[in-house]
Length: 220
Ligand code: CTP
Ligand code: MG
Image 1 (tube, protein in one colour):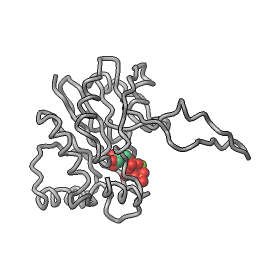
Image 2 (cartoon, helix red, strand yellow):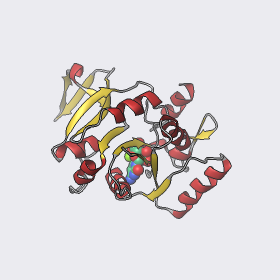
Image 3 (spheres, protein in one colour):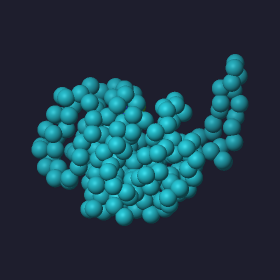
Image 4 (cartoon, helix red, strand yellow):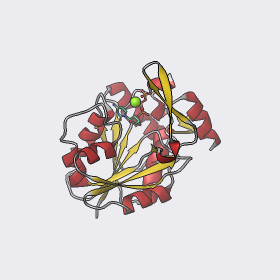
């Protein structure tokens, strides 16, 4: 079956507080996003890669410039993203014409392993998607009115990407109207009646969100 990878990188990176969107910042001398392309390419050269970038022309040009500068020859199709991650994924799914499997991955998770990509794609069934999760390490408190309550963390997990789907099924799920609850793709899929298979994620598969995350990624 044909495999597609949608790498979403159309965000503004506000929490990073850098004028250059975080997906273009360097990690070990190479743009973060290029590490991600390389991981998917290395996991299977037949992956059709769709890269979702900010709509702004100057940022698209920045990407072309970086591709030349860092000799990126991995084939990929560029899609201008939207205002929300939901919109970015929806626009990218519209670019897929055939049937197959699709891995949807945050462009700022460069430390994902090839093993996890393969496992995630391998666990997909028609009406079942696969989602990597890891246990929480901190105690958790929910703020309620003027007080707070402790939650049992043993049944709470942190969700990662890639999240993998049957193409037709995730396309159907993305015809739903946007809801602010849709912070990841599995939530969109489940709301449409889909089933989720949880798989073991990786502690190193961090989402680079803040400057501290970038420092941590350098160390890892
Ligand atoms: N993303 C996207 N389109 C959007 C918003 C986010 O493609 N409209 C992508 C980001 O580029 C990122 C991934 O979704 O790769 C996860 O989002 P997040 O870490 O929140 O990145 P940003 O939205 O860029 O960061 P921030 O929320 O701090 O502004
Ligand atoms: Mg965001």
